[in-house]
Image 1 (cartoon, helix red, strand yellow):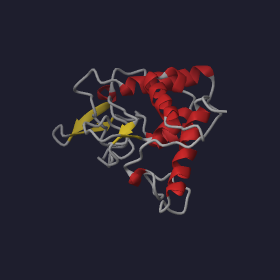
Image 2 (cartoon, rainbow, N blue to C red; image 1 turned 90 degrees about the horizontal axis):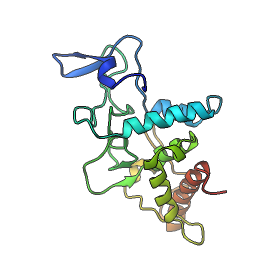
Image 3 (cartoon, one colour; image 1 turned 30 degrees about the vertical axis):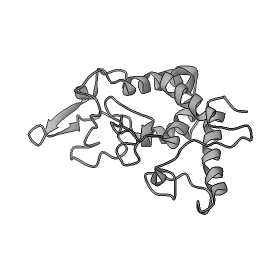
Image 4 (spheres, rainbow, N blue to C red; image 1 turned 180 degrees about the vertical axis):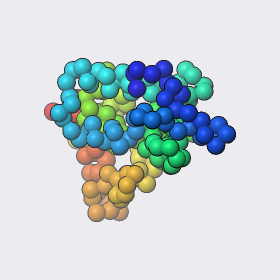
Length: 200
């Protein structure tokens, strides 16, 4: 990721330039890679954490219009879904709840933090190195009241409730009571703060 200027260096156009496919043996980061990194530890050392942090900072940039929210169309020679792929630029921890917006920089006004994505970044140990993540974690911390309950808004329940291949953080049986809803949200918020070393 850091060895190339952009995803354009490792892709080639097909279908008369309408889609990009990766050149042989090239790869681009996605949510599945992040999931693996977040839930393993053998790779973690100061140098590797810094490499991941620098890569995330690069993905979060928005200074090149031709790359902004450009999501690679495939992982192989044939176009497949873009679900899970990180954009060439514009990676965001804010979302509108509809894929691919959980990973791209949304233009809408109603935005929530993607707590799952932030948790995975925190588990990777990169929060202290990425200003946008520091800001997100500090704002989540601000939503925790004196009783330890997190009141961060979660409007897009499809990212949180239930379980499926692309989302699901719910541990409570349902959210019919405010207490069960608050327990699920607080648990995730405190996990983020714990992995970001802001909560014992």
